[in-house]
Amino acid sequence: MFPELATDRLILREITEADAEGIFACFSNDDVTRYYGQESLVSIEQAKNIVNFFANNYKEKRGIRWGIQIKGTDGIIGTIGFNAWLPKYKRAEIGFEINPAYWHQGYASEAIRKIITYGFDSLDLTRIGAVVFLENDASNNLLTKLGFQKEGVLRNNIYQNGRPYDTYVYSMIK
Image (cartoon, rainbow, N blue to C red; front, side, top):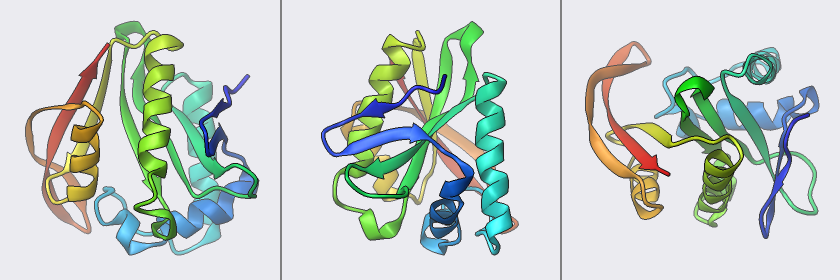
């Protein structure tokens, strides 16, 4: 059964095909995908494929991705979760994105704090990592503020629009 989590303002819940519009709203926006390592979506079918990708990752214990929903509203404003989840090694990488209409309102930090607690307490992780484009000041500052430590730079680590980018590597240890 997929774990549903709650914060003061948010519900973190399973992503379903009904959320394809919300996924499309995020991932078709160049401001969101600019530092994501993927091209912006151009069709709702691509969004449905992402929904299926997240579901399969969870079934196969390779990742877990929640839809971020504001309490009392319908639909999602973004997603958050763990990628590269390796239960045997008790580690995962955090990933998240939020529709720009909801930026700078504290939703990302609220959701991140919740899944960090869930990761350490319920998934028994000992390490939560993050990989962030050097140019992504908002995410770099947010992760640092939340207690992630910068470990180094991975050179030419992620391709975006056919060009390689360096990324910072962060971690938080239980």
